[in-house]
Amino acid sequence: MSTSTLSTARPRAAVLRTEVRLFRREPGGIFWILMFPTLLLVILGSIPAFRESDKSLGGLRLVDLYVPVVVLVAMITAGVQSMPQALTGYRERGILRRMSTTPVRPSSLLSAQMLVHGLAVLVSTLLALAVGRLVFDVRLPEQLAGYVLALVLAVLAAIALGSVVSAVSRTTKIAGAIGSAVYFPMMFCAGVWLPVQSMPHTLARVVELTPFGAAARALGQAASGDWPGWGHLGVLAAWTVLLSALAARWFRWE
Amino acid sequence: MCRTGSGRDPRAMTTHPVIEVSGPRKSYGGRAVVDGVTFAVEEGEIFGILGPNGAGKTTTVECVEGLRTPDEGRVRVAGLDPVADHEQVSRVLGAQLQQSELQAKITVREALELYASFYPHPADWRPLAEHLDITGQLTARFGKLSGGQKQRLFIALALIGNPRVVVLDELTTGLDPRARRDTWRLIEDVRGNGVTVLLVTHFMEEAQRLCDRIAVIDKGRIAALDTPAGLIRRASGSTVISFTPSAPLDEDELQALPALASVAHKDGRITLAGTDETVNAVISLLARQHITAHQLRVTDATLDDAFLDLTEASA
Image: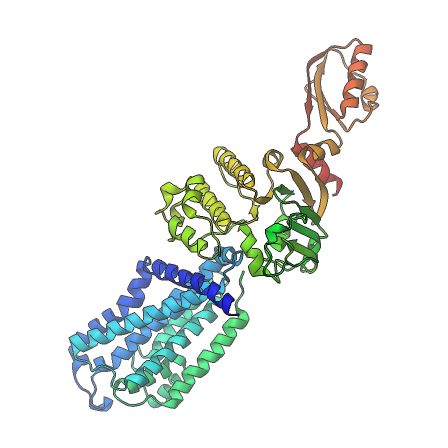
């Protein structure tokens, strides 16, 4: 119904505007999602060894590999740490219920939160790319279309994973605990301690089957000018579909 | 049933009750929380739902708000099904929920503007905020408001869509006596503007002062439905007589008083509950025995007494 679509477009936009405004009032979210990834890049990049080209990495420097990695740090932080806190908090504190009594569905609050976190990750990505380019002379993604595609798929996977965390957590406390338990393995897979490209062969093959291992490979390939491997993109898409289905199945409104 | 066509203004149907609840049942884990509660609320009424904790009050109004689907039975708001026609019902029904909050960092003004954007013909939030005395808090964040300010904001949000009906669930719980009285005045103003009020409470004084009619709910069923005065009359022992006799009275003669509901002795003082008939009989008994009744008091029972009597009777 076109009239119904029209009548819900305005409130949905208002909900999104409010959630963007509220996100900007959260210093924790701003620091950990927007600032920290680039800060990590600056710290690692200031180690001289990170700026020496390495033959085993095809002449790339470690700092080149770390730009996609810190982008993934932003994504994982937004998806499994920040967003589940907001969503379970909204449920726990009756905010979703309150909205259920209005003509606007509470799902618009959930989708606004997902969009806000997705947007925050994009801003964080631009910041990391800009600082990498200006401070460490890291080349901008050479296969731009492939990079954007991999980035979007990875953000969707992170949001889907965060939705599962929100769905299985009855309270914000549980969401915090599960979020942290998921956070560190995901950070490892993304290559925060050791980039996937430098992992031993067998470990790398396994890590590439996880959402952020696949994302790290896809972003790395696109950054150095290749089209990201369809296998990696496929792994990301499959995780997104699976996790979204689980989140939709397990999510409780109360 | 009466479903309004999309082009018809539901306000035109004044002959039907604005809220009809006929026998919804709702069970959780085999235990019936609401079991066949039936009542109808007329346009412009303040209708109270009173009952002990866990009686099924909130579940009943959640069926009216469309937050729960009854297992069986029928609920209509302005002739519409609150679950199936949720969007239309939510435009004519404003709700204040027990235990719900807003985002901690949203300001009062932002909340009012946001909720106003949800409705096709919202009220202007400025006079509403003024009326509810929250203009001083417009830039304050929700998390920093006092309990009374939060409640006033929730009343404003319940009214912002220009509803025909507002449902207020335990609105004054946790407020200090002054804030509670201020809130009562607001509820009377709301009704003064033609809005029907469905009020859930466990404060007798609140129900007695505000409500035109009250449904007393106990264990998921209606124990009584009447005006506050009617409920008091209906309870056995609606009149209370107390006095300190100058000489002991014979217990058998006391027990034989007509329409007596209860007798209590404390520190030489006798308290009898009954009706006007009991009053007359006790006065003639005292006269016959030449006993003087010191500090004789005859008072009407309160809704409190009636409530206890009604909910005990169904136990």
